Amino acid sequence: SGSGTYARTVQGKEREIISVKDFKNTDGTQVALDGTQDDTVGIQAAVVFCETFASGAILHFPASTGYGKITTQLGINASISIKGSGRYTSGIVCIGGINGFVINTGVDHVTIENLDIAQAVRFSTTANGAAGITIIGTSGSHSNSHTFRDVLIDGFRDAIIGDYFYFCLFDNV
Image (tube, rainbow, N blue to C red):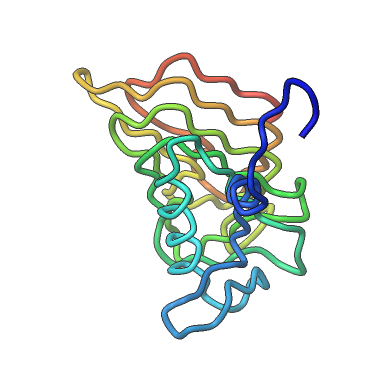
C-alpha cells in the first residue's frame, strides 16, 4: 500500500466484479453463454448473489460465442450493476416471448450497460408482447436513479416500460 491508500485483500478486490460464468444451472453445468443451453437458473443466482453486497458488486457478462439463454424473466430485487463486454458480444436471449430484466418495486440504483437483451428472433419486424427491461414502481414506492448505457434491446414490443420511475439515465439505448 502506498501513501493515502488502504490495504485490502485480493479476495476483497475480486468480490467487486463477479462473472456470471462462475455460477451453475440446476443440472450443475456452468453458465455457458452459448445461446443453446438454458442459463436462466445460473444467471438469476448470479444476480441474487451480487444483490447481497452492500457496496454493489458488478455482475459481469464476458464476451462469448453466444448469449445467455433464459426461459423466465430475470428479477432484480436490490441495487446492482450488470455490465457486459460490449454490444454484440455479450447479453441474454429470451426464449418464449418473455421479459428480459424486471426491476421490482422500490429498487433503486440499477445499472445495465454494454449488454444486449434480445428475443430469440433477432432484428424481427414482428415484435412480441414483452419488454427488454421492465421497471415496476407504485405511487407509494418509486424506483429511482437507474442507468442504462450502451444497451441493445431487440425483438420486444417495448424496449423499456415501467411505472413510477424517476431520475434515470438513458444513454445509447
